Length: 437
Image (tube, rainbow, N blue to C red):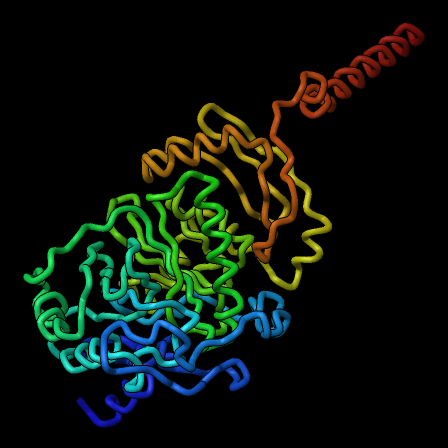
C-alpha cells in the first residue's frame, strides 16, 4: 500500500477497504464543508484494553450548547444540494458496536483511541488488496448487557452478527470472515432479522450530525413503539458515514420485494420524515426519492440511473418538493380525494405526494410489518400529508364517497344544460314554423 493511502487511513480510517480505492466527492474521507462545522478536538483514550475509558474521551460535545439554527434543520445549507449519487460504491458494511456518541472522539479509529477499533481499522487496511468485496467500516453504539454489546460486529448484507470481538481476535476474524468469506470458527454467527436503521450522530466529528441525528433517532424510537414494531425494526446511532452537509443521515438495511438485503442511504432527514420512511420504505418497499442519496452495491452513476427509471414510472411525484416553496405550499396545500376502490384508497395532496395505501402490496412487501401498518391504519382517522420539503403540513382530509347530489352536480350538469337548450331550440323552431304556415 502506498504511503499516501496509509497516510489517509491514519488521518481518517472511516473509508472503504477494497483492492482499489477510487476517491470521489461522496467518499467519507473527503471533507469539503466549512471548518466551523468540524470539531477536531484532542483524541484522548486508553490503548491498554478493548473496553476501557467508558467516560469522557476528550472528543465529546454538549449538543445543548450548539446553535440549532446554525447547525440544525433550519441551517442555511439545509436541503440546498442534490442528494442522489452521493454514496460511493461498496458491497459490504461492517459495524463495530463500541461505546456511544457522547464519548466518541472525532476520529474513532485514531491511534490514540482504544485498542479494538484502532486495530480493526488497521487490519482492514492491511488486508484490503485481498478482499473481493469493497467493505466499509462504521462504529455503532454498544452497551454491555444489551442486545448490542461492546465488541459485537454486524455485517450487511450478510445479515449476521458476531459476538464480543476482542483485539486478540482481530487478525483471525478479518482473515476468515472478510478475506476468505467463511465463518469465523471461534465465534458462531447469529442471523439478523428485520430492519436495521443507523443514524449518524457523530457530533464530535461534525456539529450538524450531532444536532440532527439524536432528534431523528428519538422520533424513530417513538414511532417504532407506537406502531408496535419493536423486535422488527431496530434503530441506533452510528459514527461518520460521509456527507456531513446532508445531516440527518440515515441508512436502512432490510429485505426488498425479492427478499434481497439492500442498504439505502437517505439524507436531509427530519423528524417529520420518519413516519414517511417507516410507512413507504419499510411498510411498502418504496423508495422515498426526495431524500434518497443512494444504495449499497450501486455506483454513483448507477444510483442516478436507477432513480431516473423510478421517476419515469411514478411520474416524478416524489421529487416534486422544492424547499424554497415549502412555506407557500404549507399555506396553499389543499387535500382532494382522488379515488377509492376495493383494497386501495388514495388521497392526493397539493404538491404531488400521494399517500395511496394498498394492503395487498404491503402484504407482499413484508407480511409481519405490513400487518402492523394495516392494523394501525384502522385505528387512526387522521392522515398527515407532506409538502415539497418533506415537512408535515397538517391533518389530511379524510376521503369519502361523494353523495348523489355532489355526483349529479359534478357529472351531469353540462348534460342537463345541453338537453334543456335543445328543448328550447326545438320549441322555438316549431313556433316559427307555425307562424309561417
